[in-house]
Length: 271
Image (cartoon, rainbow, N blue to C red; front, side, top):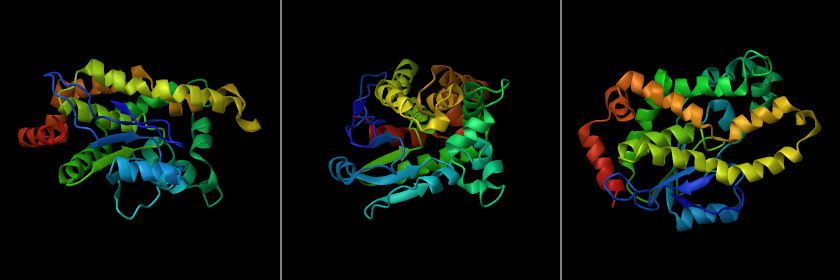
């Protein structure tokens, strides 16, 4: 993995140079994982569009999240919105459908409300979400669509992102690296790299929160939103093994990745 240095987005990296189990490596400037793009500076955009030649952007967020912080529209880029989970599946739908005033409630506020009781913690919420990544038809269909777009990519790099760049982006990365024959230890290492780059920024953010968020519940939700949790990735892996025998088996049997598709992906993306 190769870090990408931007002004306004810390959790971004190129999957290039990742070593697979037969010793080959992933090509550089083909696959870029990232957090949200809404805060990028003009200089950041120049790096992505120029240096990394991003030509396809896939937004994995729900409708509410994309509406709240929309992607910049770059003319030379094909933009695709493929929600891995819907607002309802994320628990955002009931709040956003309650009326015009309720639509203004932020995703952070909704998650704080959902996990405010003692019987449902932020980590329990997140583990439920990781199960849905694997078992829901919505997520399975979105994953198939993602790989269709990747196969249709003719030029430049494909950048995919969610909000924090570690859950939906993380699970799609786990799928990608599995298909490219990367070891699970390396998949975990890439997943947890989020914390290396995000934690210092997040701890500073927690010190400067608005007054209404200066409580342990809000801070726990923010940590859940931005920091990777290896137990959650393991939950997803267990679900993949339950449905397909192994992560690779899940991608073949449930998602429908054929041997021909697998060979084409490896031919395109490995060196």
